[in-house]
Image (cartoon, rainbow, N blue to C red; front, side, top):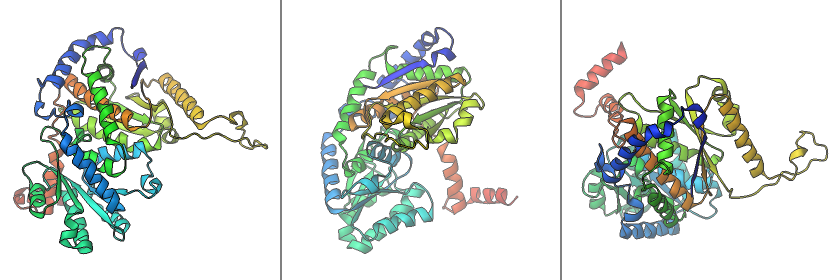
Amino acid sequence: MLHLDLSNVTPFLPTGWRTGEEKGLEKAHDHVLNGTGAGSDFLGWVRLPADYDKEEFARIQKAAQKIRSDSKALVVIGIGGSYLGARAVIETLTSNNFNLTRGEGTAIYFAGNGLSADGLNEVIDLVKDVDFSVNVISKSGTTTEPAIAFRIFKALLEEKYGKDGARERIYATTDAKRGALKGLADKEGYQEFVVPDNVGGRYSVLTAVGLLPIAAAGLDIEALMAGAREEMELLSKPGMDNPAWQYAAARHALYESGKRVEILAGYEPAFRFFAEWWKQLYGESEGKDGKGLFPASVEFTADLHSMGQFIQQGERLMFETVVRFDTAHTQLTIPDDPENVDGLNFLSGKSMAFVAERALQGVTLAHVDGGVPNILLTVPARDARSLGALIYFFEFACGVSGYLLGVNPFDQPGVEAYKNNMYALLGKPGYEKQKAELEKRLES
């Protein structure tokens, strides 16, 4: 079970701050569970850990087994929620060097999440001489970055295996009924998985969007769903003893007191992409209507030697949410040095886990003394069950937080602005007037 510690937040807030948040939390909780608020069409994730499509889940496991048997690599093509969740889970449960440490397993490469020729060419070079498959993830099939990448890798597969052979190595995760990718998948006979209509991209990691790549990496998706299901049952109960209420209340109270940045801090390098997933979840859900905490992340202790100075003594506009894993995958003991050149023999015989825990405690005390509130979230282990619980905790708390803030947590109207400008400047049909206006601005 996850454990939330707010003891290093309460000194920064007025007495009775929890009580002041309770009425808003009750309303927000009802919005999330019963669909009584804005964006209720996108609440399919709420009951997903219990109500997921069991037949499709079995097909996901079967497809993953096939990929692992016939492919040395899987290229996962998607952007935003179509790749961050899968990468977050794969790396957190294994290593940020997963493709180097997997042994004889299938390597997982991510493409279509940017517009770098160098980045795409690097993935091409990594897979062109081995057997590989592609999982293209897009609800529409027309989003620029993944659509370009899919064109390239589809052609590469067809050149390598022929159209019939390529067909057996392309897995399309897309809309159930409509869209360019759905039409192509039906026409070509690709195996298809569904992006549910009622689950937004940033909440989709526990659907086929995340589960197929995660299973292809050899990870236990049944345990992942079980952990999420246990957390779902816990968080469905209203009241101030609900940890999602506590987290949402603390965030909102700190925001109301003038904090503008939330830093997610982890002490495991493998946690980096979980933080990237978390940033999209909270940034896209809350950052609208001129409101919202700016989500940032740091990797400790490395970033204490870069961002540490600002966090300790810079403008007091942030607070930290620290994710701590209670147990490590491996143990390492610090050896004795007879000459004690580095002066660290006082640590001889101590474990790295002991040193890391003392570092976390010391950092927390220093930052709190420096005026930075700290939320501590302890996760039992870096295993699939615990990570499923952590994913669901942040998703549920995000929905509650968004409603508490007074925004729709499930839309993202601002994302279209850059897309429209890009389409116009690239010369997409129908954008001629906007293209002329933008080019005039660029010339001035």
